[in-house]
Image (cartoon, rainbow, N blue to C red; front, side, top):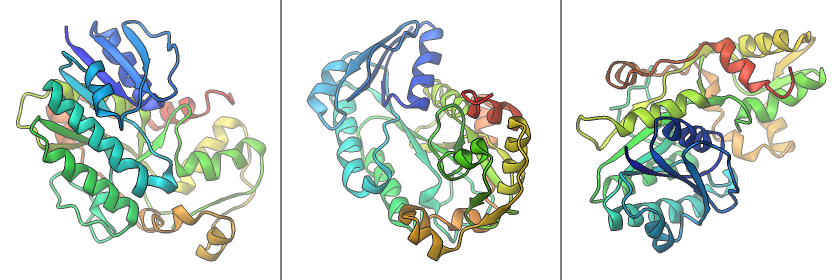
Length: 296
């Protein structure tokens, strides 16, 4: 069995650690605030990923470091670079591979859909630029690296536009507003499928320095809202899309530059993940039910 370090104790990091522990590996789950996690084979260690020396001590003997940490959304340009730099230096110091959790922002607004993992990165947003630079810094490391790129999350305690903007209104039976074209088909990734892709990447025997896409399910925001409401036993009496001016007035400044993701269909080619890693997406109903675990 192997030794793995998972950096970041959010829904994906915890699920990744859980899966690795269940497979019999020795696992450390670390973040600045993690406490006892009660997962078989998983030890929780408080640490700051920006501190390469500290992370190196934790990572001695590790086969791979999973970088699943998340910076506050509005602080990506300042907070993410020290995290990836600390992770890379620690991995280099102990000779561990890096498996980086990323997303689709780096492809930019002008990329053709479906998105393929070998498309060149051409970011058109600040957050997309941050993700692109993080991948470039990881690629320059002298250890093997893979990036797992995910679309918008569904799942228990997942933080996403859907969970932040739509879900509270649905739970409370209020009118619903979202962003972009409510009828544009969109890829949704289950946090548990993200973790399964990360874990499977660690076993990949082909050439590293590449990306894998998380297998997704597809539904327009309107369909997702309706199916979620039905599972909650709610009627959606009103559904509309916020204008940009409304979003600004409501303080959704960070969402404005990413609105393009919802203005047109967003399709993701995950055939490499399915064929090479053996990971397929759970059903959309499973994703929704897990998202609503505290409300059903």
